[in-house]
Amino acid sequence: MGGKKIIYHCYGGAHSSVTAAAIHLGVLDPAKVPEKDELLALSLFDRQTRDGHGRLHFFGFDEWGNQVFSVGCRNMGMVLERVLQETAALLGFGDELLFVDTLHCVSLKMRIGGYISRHLELVGCGRPLVVQGTREVYPRLVQLVRQVKAQVAP
Amino acid sequence: MNYLYLGLGDLYLPAAAAAIHLQRIMPGEEELLQLPYFRPACPADEGRLYLAGRDMFGHNVYLTFVSEHPDIFVRGIQSLLGILKLPRDAMQVIPVLLENPRVGTLCRLLQKLGLPAAANYLGLRLVRNRKSDLLGLAAWKKHHGG
Image 1: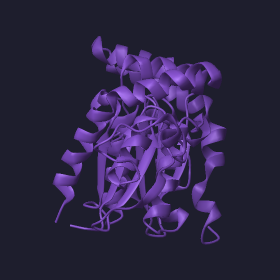
Image 2: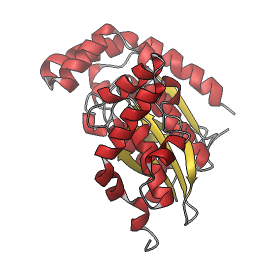
Image 3: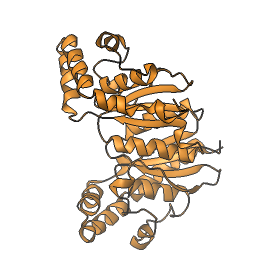
Image 4: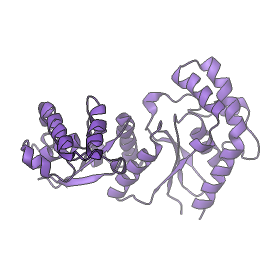
């Protein structure tokens, strides 16, 4: 089943989708909650800006050759998924995209921290909160990625 | 090559823009009212790509609308073309945006109140007010020396 494009999406494309993509690719150990430095070492973690929303960010290939992406959709995740799926289908790539919404794994702490860091650009205040929140919901993200991998495994 | 006219909160402007693209002139009001997608947008339409027709060069012309953040969709489609290794004009997105998205809401409200003629009248006014913008889009002129 290799050759799929797995697209993890969330509101800002800066926290949960990036973390899920890293878990999927084995950059983060699913068995161990990552330390702050491990999260901050991920490209885009708490770095995505509004100008990057909508842009599919390539993270790498998984063990079966699927490409893994993340994207921030603000509150338009379902609509963006529909538009991109329909566009891909019209262009003859209908079966290649798999969208995975990570927003339901996000806690209030992550939302508040993400808002302060990304929207208000008060990184010093928001980042510690969003890192702590991400560590707390990490098992949920691991579980989600396990389900996705079970779905795409050959 | 495909074209996608992207509206913000309404289908009137993208439907008119697509019709201008296909006919290469501004359609009359009666013609606009006959177009299948010249109507108030409903939530089920959001993000659906409707085929308006095929232009004289054989390119498909689509239209759709989104309720917010059209910039995300433009970037999303361009980005998708990149990862599919397709040229950027495989799906050329042309935003046709309402200056005030509340007008789209008003059209939907009129439709819900059982006043489709009033909604369509508003749609025609929208198109008339943006006539020069719509003609200026003239996406077909940029290709094939059209």
